[in-house]
Length: 89
Image (cartoon, rainbow, N blue to C red; front, side, top):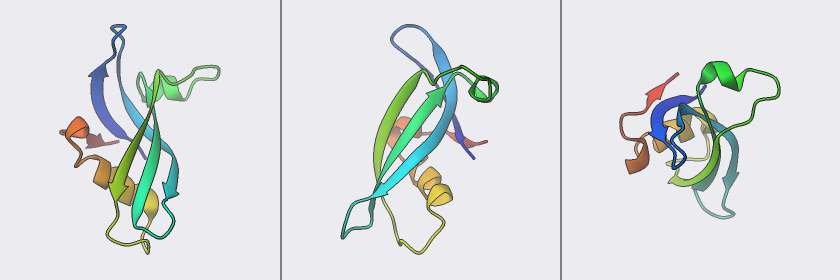
């Protein structure tokens, strides 16, 4: 599971494959901090010895903690302004 949203980095590299690597729930809240990696594409992500081109962190508000966190967080991330038009892959 991942989302596809193309971005051009400051160095000119274009990457599109965003993958959640960690979700942390803030104690006593329904707010999640989502750590993500950006890869050039899905193919590169699977190659040994390759690294993500960028890491990012987003905060999302969950409706409930009684859910499958990864699909829910991907859905919430796609609602953020930076991820408008992102697609599930």
